[in-house]
Amino acid sequence: MEDITIQENSLKGKNVVITGASSGVGRAAAEAFAKEGCNIIAVARGQKGINEIVAFCRELNVLSIGVIADMSIAEDVEKVAEKALEIGGKIDIWVNNAGVMASGKFEEIPLEIHQQVLKTNLFGYMYGAYNAVKIFKKQNEGILINNISIGGYMPAPYSAVYSASKHGIRGMMECLQGEISNRRNIHICNMYPQLQNSTGNLHSAKYSGFDMKIPFIASDPRETAAGMVELAKHPKKDLFPDFRAAALTNIYRLFPKTVINTASAAVRFKMKHNDAKEDNPGNVLTNSKEPLRVYGKIPSKTSNSLGIAFLAGLGVSAALMLMTRKL
Image (cartoon, rainbow, N blue to C red; front, side, top):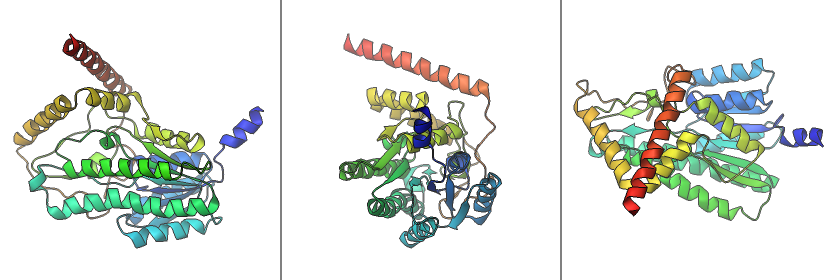
């Protein structure tokens, strides 16, 4: 019985498409699935990052190909699906992960940047799902994993269009979950990680003096990638990959106005006192540049413990505030 269970949960030989695979969570996901013995179709806009992740996979004796594609362009995403089907004629798992972010005062961020954030995030996930679901229905099986972030539940301060894209993705995918609910072997899984200690922060667009560093409460992108692997083995509709993501979301649900107003005030203060107010479009319009790696900064056990302690403190404070409000 144990051997049968191991075989059923094995991902060895599965064909996995991962978008945004050149750095950050996407790179961590590609490495994690490769270590499971999966065939990797790594997708990104830049050649260098793709070459590196394909080389990593092949060192593990895993079949891997790189596809240069912009997920905001429908024809590029169709090309990804076509290339993936050339490996064994099927796609087992599609990971929607590619995303961009622009932060700053809404009216000071160029409209072109706002538009591209929507195209990459919302339209990119739509194009990915559109191709994946069609293929899954023909196969009568498949798993779509969407890396949405807690931004699908709560707004990110001074990142209005990014927040809109994440809320839109969540709404779209929850509807699709209903559409495929009569198909036992097709799954749409939504992940809601919090801020990551990844290169995403380093690559994002920044305006109006916005220059937030990676905080100590940021989560480990490899843990988020491990959550994706877990969803591939045991699909479920929704997953908060760690305590911090769930805690932050629950605190926002309890005190939505307090949370967004306080967070916005803190960001506003930092922007006001940032003397080097240089606008930076980041990787919104072009492919990500160096560093192309998983982590934004080298993780430490101390920062991890501080993050958990900080959120525990927030949780206690929230509980006390709720009790006070009821009295």
